[in-house]
Length: 520
Ligand SMILES: Cc1cc2nc3c(=O)[nH]c(=O)nc-3n(C[C@H](O)[C@H](O)[C@H](O)COP(=O)(O)OP(=O)(O)OC[C@H]3O[C@@H](n4cnc5c(N)ncnc54)[C@H](O)[C@@H]3O)c2cc1C
Image (cartoon, rainbow, N blue to C red):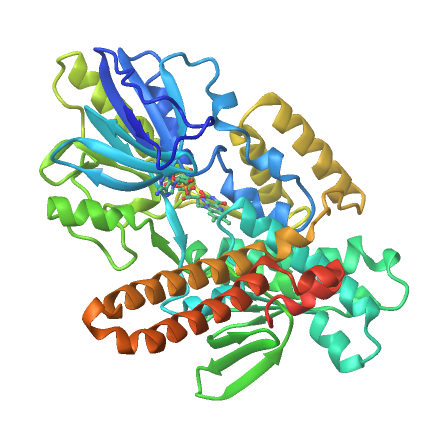
């Protein structure tokens, strides 16, 4: 492994090549696929290097509970190196992988201290998927997705912030806007979010506010498809819809979102009718697209990709023409397997098994076979739907108990299980939401960082243009024109930068910054 630092820095790791003579497995991603693969290699005669853009393992299925104040981020995202501390053959590196070179067998990752190039003998790519706005990335500014801890904390700030701002408002129409919550996407994440926001409004918060009745909040679940939880079949889909409606959630199906801005969403219904819902808090829980690393793998190997950007793999999860490269989890396309945690875990374990078998000189095992352990979604406290195999389709309390058992079982670490169960007791048996702290930075950082990078890009482009038109010594008469153009760009950019860094919002309080962030 070599590390090249862009500038000498005391924090930079010293350039080193610490590679041992053992077979080196590089794993990209610390999610379900990456972590399960790493753990399955604990006893193999290999060195494992896990490179991940985050220093934690994220239990995505419980993110919605972080967003709605039930759980803290630490409970769903333990530090990966803590999880792997008892596995001496595993090294964890923080870094965003920017390049994989399949010919040179190297992975390049970047971090604030520089660029790291890590060679591999075997590679397992488990970089997961991101949110898809179906080509409308501009929606993301106003409707955060639910893919990361940052997303969940931002949403937590927005959701609780809307109740705060409704309490401040004297204008009934404006109050209604603050108290209207729209969740886009009626899959498990959308259903769980809508259910939790409704519980917040009806159970957890009413006694805490003096000027507003939080029970008057509207929670609207929208989907362009004709069913809630379509993948669960008609019976469970209908049961889920009924339960949501009994909790006061307004379920609007066949409703396609065509616009999202600061004050609302625009919708086209199946009959072509166009309408607008005025609301401040929007949650995007529709659509995923695989990590862009999939495109690199496809381009270098000639493998195909599906519409969601997932890489089509061989039946043993290897990449076309590259038996040393495995693609697992949400990034892989095989036999229409769904993007769920079990596919990633089983894929990660399978890839590790194949590598171990090869090193022992054994013939390759059977092709990857997914064991479907069922799917579940919780709708409210004590109510969930669960579908296991062809026979078991449950809705209600027993399904919720199953959901509880499975989630506790798969949560990483004793401490996390214990504190999670305590927080569930507080929220499910009593009414509390103990994890509600949010900061202004959590609410506005994503938007401001996006603006900052856009500004930096614009500056870079302006600089390049300026370089391109820089006059030579023989055309000095045009120099002042060139310079003044450059100055204008700089002063505009300074304004944009200070806005992006929050100079304007620094004068305001937390609540006002929430209100202004999407507009400024
Ligand atoms: C809100 C939500 C709820 C869900 N609920 C359920 C559920 O109830 N049941 C279920 O079975 N499934 C559920 N899923 C799906 C499940 O979480 C995924 O299928 C699973 O996480 C996929 O695992 P993975 O390892 O492929 O990817 P991930 O778990 O997403 O892990 C990807 C890893 O790659 C890292 N990474 C990404 N890009 C790079 C890069 N360029 N460089 C370095 N590292 C990188 C990330 O930091 C991360 O560590 C849910 C997903 C979400 C978002």
